[in-house]
Length: 257
Image (cartoon, rainbow, N blue to C red; front, side, top):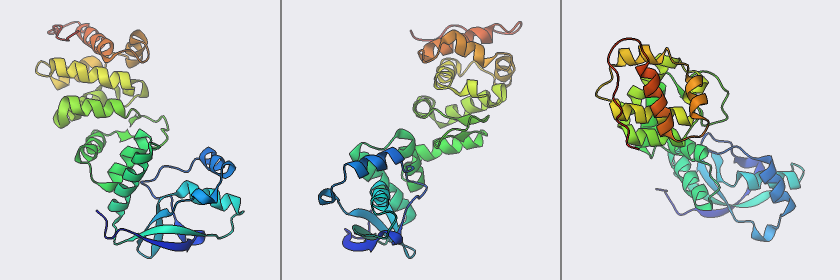
């Protein structure tokens, strides 16, 4: 993956560049903990990629922040393990692998790193499906606006369950029915919709489904299902509400308990 095994090189903290999109944000509490427990004896080299005339910190931005705090912001020379010839995507892949081995990487940060690296086709396809349906995937701090999908695990599980075409269809139905309302985009609702569509995918007409679901308040489903209840409860309630439409065919019960 990398052009060379890396060379140890002393570099001033003033010349180290971090805060790249694939990196998790610097947590001040983590920096403060490093400062409190600081022992230079155990300071390992900072992993750096030299690209386009810049030393990009791939792994070690919290250590750099701690050093800057300890020294009052003064430039300090630190040992770095410098890689050359890497692309931005390779840096992102390296960041993901290094942080994954330490167990520090949150799922949202891992997904961001994989997207930036371009190494996981499924993750890329999930993001593209989400955006084609008019949604955004809130991998950073959610803002609570409409059409913003916050769940990560539920989205990934749903994509695996329905496949790309079914996942895209589900998003289209949800967008058409509930117009991106936040209450319709919880993990329970997404998982319940996936189960509902999987059970009735050959019986559902998209126009009719949107028409019927749009008459259902997703907040009512969430309230009846109760927060964090199993997806089956959401799926059952979606089917029940769907069948309350005054005319037309009713969906039979096809869920496996």
